[in-house]
Image (cartoon, rainbow, N blue to C red; front, side, top):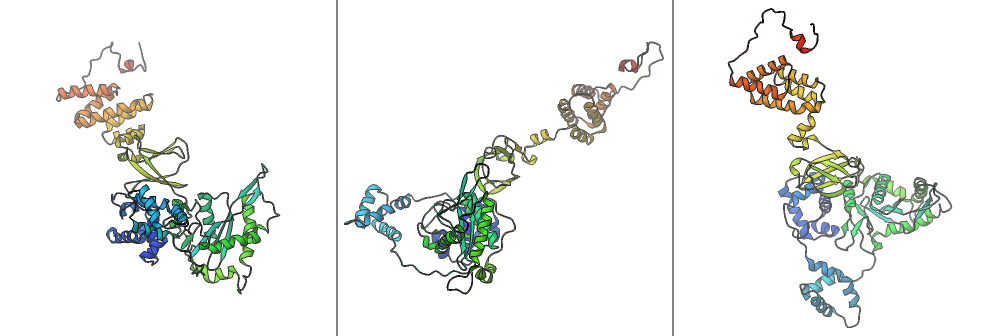
Length: 520
């Protein structure tokens, strides 16, 4: 599998075609990749040792990790250069006196590293195949879905501004029964295109095996007869609905002649029927389109004793695959660097999401939808968050932080009291009195940390005696208890038993020093 790594969405298409029983040649021809590439990927399946259904359920970074374990990407520049010259070669061959040898000599002069004459002729002949006559194509029920956009648009009037809003019209049909679906959308962009496809499948009540789109940008990013570059969002959509993708050839409308015919029929059976109606929103426009399209599907076809809807319900609907339980959400892909605060920034929302701190400074892959954000590193999912649209906000999982930061976030009076209760009753009493002293709780946090440190470094008996003396003196500072511990460590056997003072009139008593009740 030398060369540039294939997108994992395309490899999922390969695996689905393989599950459906297609051979290597058929898969290579359908996906526009070489047979050796198909063979190489299929040979890796026993090494991976996973069930095909489980492989298809993996996200793209996880699947790429299984198939490509550090293999370098490679791309042959001379074939790319040759493809760019094909239109020129085809045009020049039509000129008098220009043959393949003349073109090859000019080709080698401009690109010395190019193909030899034999390879040049081989690739050129492959591209310039003679035209073939049309033929009638047979289609199996539930196999394909042809989709296209009509050349003419429909419109509605904005109630507030009076502006006429022109809407592209999406048209689809099942070639076996010629059962059609027509739907107006706001644009031909990928989001509206995906939405129209979803509504089409819900209208059909099932999913065909293969989607056959035109070469519009929402379906094919870079058109090519042999290896078109499919829009990743469309590939994800088809993977979600368990469909393969087989775009038509460039400027070859006959590849989907039936949907082209449906567009023409839509002009007379839908456009013409609603031409005098006025609509004020897209929903009402689509309701009118739906009614007209229903009549069209229920109209008896010429030279056939049934209508399109009868053929669809009798022979094709049961052959469709079931719809998935969850509707599709468009996936967006990013590659971001984890910041020093172990968060990544999703720029579209200006929001930050946490990543385990050990990935600080590394580049991670982010796949996000309308509702979820998933983060991957080296093929493994390391974080998942619910998408948050709050600008400049942070979505943080505490387990992603290092131990110091987790401790900092957990700090509270209840937290310190609970920790102290697990050490000793005297320490718990001191901590409770600290937080009852009237200071702000945050001012006592460092004192509590210092007391916990003294507890770990001091023998339990000495620490207990120090706490008791601090309680008697009503002084709970870290330095005071530390000095008591130092004195006790110097004279561990010294114990100062309370000495009863003799009765004397000049003794003021503890009430005087506590300033609670002073009697002179």
